[in-house]
Image (cartoon, rainbow, N blue to C red; front, top):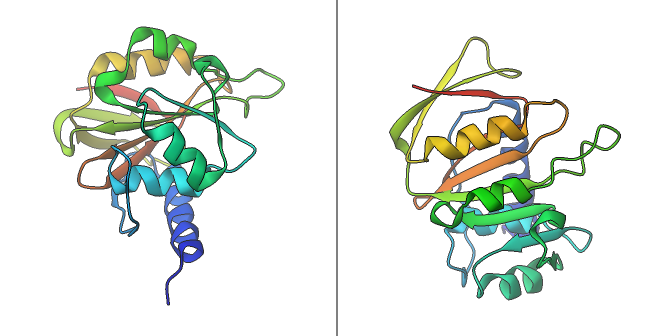
Length: 186
């Protein structure tokens, strides 16, 4: 019998593996009743990473209650204080990107992880990824506006400061771009 604990443990292992292999794509098979406006893989990621010690931000008015009830995570109305930010790509703005916390030199782990729903992974613009966990370069295609990748690179320009990104599409495909990864639009 598979339980919620088994599902979140499996999803956690997949996320850790994706963080160590930037640009690899996986399909989430996490099966859960979903009452949010996000794909199941977004909810699976929220259930796996959120607990009562984190803060999160989302612009969707329906989801904070769902996320809080399911995880115990604390909704933050102040984006710049959120440990996790869950958005759909069309909700991203320059203000959102500028407000993300990038940590400090003494505590780089106090940065935000951005969980973004994109239209498609596997179709769209081609991005080249380089850095730790990648032998030469990984290429990934996704319908993700390059301006957000440029903003991400600016936020990650002073390692170890920066943000991590988890990108998930409507077909429950996910990929991860850690702060250490250099991205180029092709």
